[in-house]
Length: 200
Image (cartoon, rainbow, N blue to C red; front, side, top):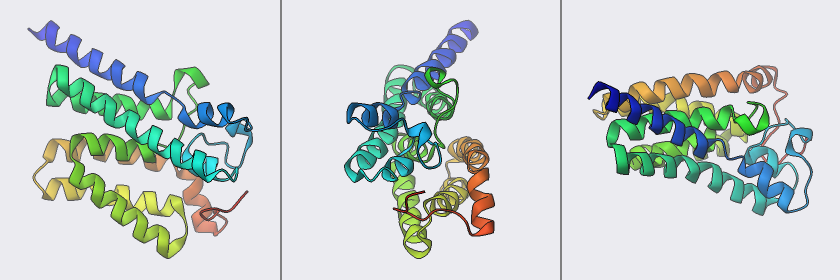
């Protein structure tokens, strides 16, 4: 029984990782005849950097793809392995986006995938995340500040809503997200961070 449970857990992590490691920003930009995202702006493969190429449609498609791959991982794992497998797949998908094997373990910063796994696990919290993101982005025009603020509020909100296990999971994801945004944090403090829609 223990071996079976361990096998399900490992499979859920692997499935989540494989879903999460799909680099939609790179794929869509290349298919559209655009440049290698790693040579543009921040060098990131996410939607914010795609937007810096001036292609709003591609940026929106990247955001959707990076989000829904997290949601899909959670739903698939949850369907076959239950709630615990869904949470492990969420972790795997997030790590897969940050460190995709196909790109030498150099991926994105995880915001869209964070929203996607949150949507799959507990959609009201995903809506709350997006509401906070939109408010902070509107006030500051900084995508990074909006993501940092929304992610910081997510674990305590889940905890207060009685979802302790999810709160602990998203505390881990939030720490990883903040670590991936350490350069953005420095630039925010120095007031040199690029604003939404600004080419760099």
